[in-house]
Length: 455
Ligand code: HEC
Ligand code: HEC
Ligand code: HEC
Ligand code: HEC
Ligand code: HEC
Ligand code: HEC
Ligand code: HEC
Ligand code: HEC
Ligand code: HEC
Image (cartoon, rainbow, N blue to C red; front, side, top):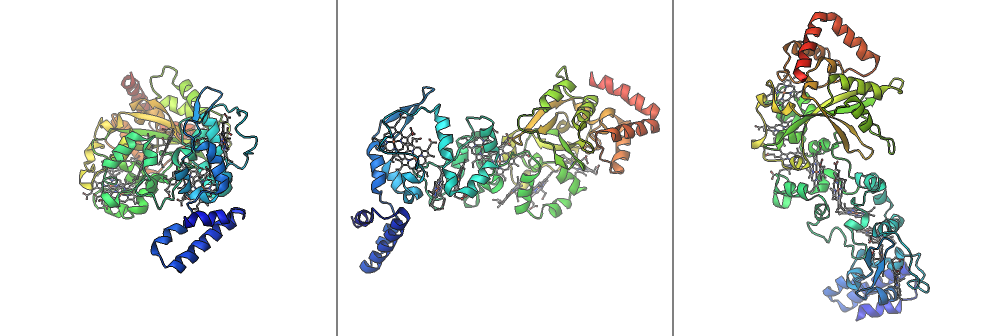
């Protein structure tokens, strides 16, 4: 009752002033009455008279609007939910300032779809949450929205604008927002070492952030997150794993820590003068799918020669830009990425990878980052890792013992020993011919061997 009168008495003050006055009066009352329970009252949960005008119509269940595409949009707003939300202080007009109550609601306003309605109104969040908006616009979700996806989340898919609570009031609900759309991953995560550890359980945002979520397989940002908590990995793995740095660079953490997983080798395309940057397609300029199917017209998988010409196609145009691939041993599905288990279940057996015909090296893909950072993939022949033609392009990835061609093993050890990371372009040709000269007869024999292998 007291609360009600405070807001009413102040109804004609500007909104912000009114809220301050309300708070001041509530505080004064608390002091005056000495009632501890009144502390809760200082939170402004009364509806303003302007908001009540809107709710005269919008608190009526059943009010709906028909969109141009035939969808029906419920127009009901729960008064209590709004009164208790963080946005009560800004009122309806804080976000719907374009509405003129006198004319409003009489003439139907044509909006194409519910999605377009949501997308249009999302712009208002920028007025007060500029930083969050900028973070969101840097995300894979926003990139999907820009590309026309109707499934990627807008602000209102995770925050009901009419019932927004402070993150501090919502306990353990952080992952709920993600679960609605990433069910499989969320279930796997909940059962994992990180998800199942009770109060200490991690949230999705501990690795992915909340608003500026990046494509998972882009670069090493997720691995960097792991290492930011597990700072000791380099030293602890060095106790049993030789060439630790190289292993941790070439193998994704879940590839060893997700028990029973199916691994694959992914050859990611890098470019730039030092070829240190993962190549990404520009919005509206698709090239990977086209070039990959040109290189592999039969769809049987890119082989060594096709990869070489594919990289040639990419480096053409850029003056001193280099295009290479870097190999990474990784898991095949998002679910496997999240099924991490206790250290006792991790893969320690060298022979799983370092033996001839190792299962982990039978499935190979070539990938390039798409415009939103998510990988575009094309299958490769397993022979690509061992073929003569790909020595140049796959130079950064080779596993001792898994090669089927003994001679090549020796050659690659030599090449890798020299630490060569071979770019596309004429340098490859030079190196290829240098190598050919060195082992002319040998290479020919190996090539013959290779083609029988591939058939
Ligand atoms: C924090 C900003 C914000 C405030 C405050 C706000 N709205 Fe909204 N409103 C939105 C957004 C965003 C949407 C679009 C929601 C969506 O995506 O469906 C919306 C949609 C609506 C709709 C269409 C139905 C729907 O769910 O899409 C109605 C009706 C509406 N608001 C009424 C109100 C009323 C009445 C108030 C005050 C009691 C209010 N709004 C306060 C942001 C706000
Ligand atoms: C007299 C009843 C009435 C009042 C008062 C009223 N609305 Fe509406 N409102 C409607 C009707 C009817 C529609 C559906 C119009 C249509 O079909 O295009 C609507 C639609 C909306 C929509 C959906 C988007 C749009 O513009 O079509 C929003 C948002 C909204 N109202 C917000 C508000 C806010 C905020 C207030 C207070 C400032 C308010 N309304 C006051 C009846 C009302
Ligand atoms: C007129 C200003 C205004 C607009 C527009 C606005 N907000 Fe807010 N929002 C606030 C205020 C004030 C708070 C409470 C203070 C705070 O915690 O930052 C808040 C808090 C929030 C919170 C909770 C923050 C927390 O503490 O956990 C979320 C989530 C949020 N807003 C989302 C949105 C979304 C989504 C939109 C667009 C639909 C939006 N806001 C539009 C003013 C606004
Ligand atoms: C995929 C779900 C999701 C989307 C989309 C999303 N949010 Fe959030 N947001 C959350 C979650 C979960 C939290 C609370 C956890 C946290 O603090 O990171 C949060 C927290 C917030 C907060 C308070 C903490 C902070 O980071 O400032 C604000 C304000 C906010 N969101 C506004 C927005 C706005 C504006 C948009 C649209 C540009 C948006 N959110 C889009 C899930 C989402
Ligand atoms: C409304 C549905 C929706 C919600 C809610 C949602 N996402 Fe997404 N998310 C998508 C869609 C759609 C994509 C793009 C297609 C895909 O990868 O499934 C995507 C992509 C992603 C990606 C990139 C996937 C990749 O292949 O690299 C990550 C990571 C991600 N979301 C994490 C989250 C997290 C964390 C949350 C909670 C804070 C969340 N998402 C909430 C729909 C959603
Ligand atoms: C411990 C860190 C960690 C946490 C916590 C985490 N993820 Fe991931 N997430 C990863 C890693 C690592 C990948 C795979 C990256 C790669 O491909 O190299 C990934 C990939 C993803 C992808 C892309 C999957 C695909 O199909 O390629 C989505 C979507 C995703 N995570 C959503 C979530 C959601 C939702 C949650 C919370 C339930 C969550 N993640 C919690 C580390 C984490
Ligand atoms: C070649 C397989 C392999 C790779 C790659 C690998 N691990 Fe491990 N990891 C193991 C094994 C095996 C153990 C258990 C060692 C032992 O017996 O104590 C372990 C132990 C751990 C432990 C517990 C011991 C400690 O260091 O605190 C953590 C945490 C861990 N790994 C995190 C990671 C992270 C993060 C990555 C990626 C940067 C990673 N691991 C990459 C195989 C691997
Ligand atoms: C926010 C900090 C944080 C991040 C980020 C994180 N972890 Fe953890 N991790 C933990 C904590 C805390 C535990 C202990 C949970 C337990 O044992 O109950 C743990 C446990 C583990 C274990 C089991 C260790 C053991 O002793 O059995 C492995 C393996 C592991 N994490 C790997 C990873 C990998 C891989 C990533 C990245 C994809 C990662 N972690 C990201 C905090 C983190
Ligand atoms: C999960 C698969 C996997 C496991 C398990 C594994 N390795 Fe490796 N190993 C690799 C990959 C991939 C490389 C990187 C090849 C490259 O440099 O291109 C590598 C590289 C090496 C190298 C160096 C080759 C070079 O070119 O520098 C040595 C030596 C090696 N491993 C030994 C071991 C030993 C010993 C163990 C067991 C304690 C082990 N590996 C476990 C996959 C594995």
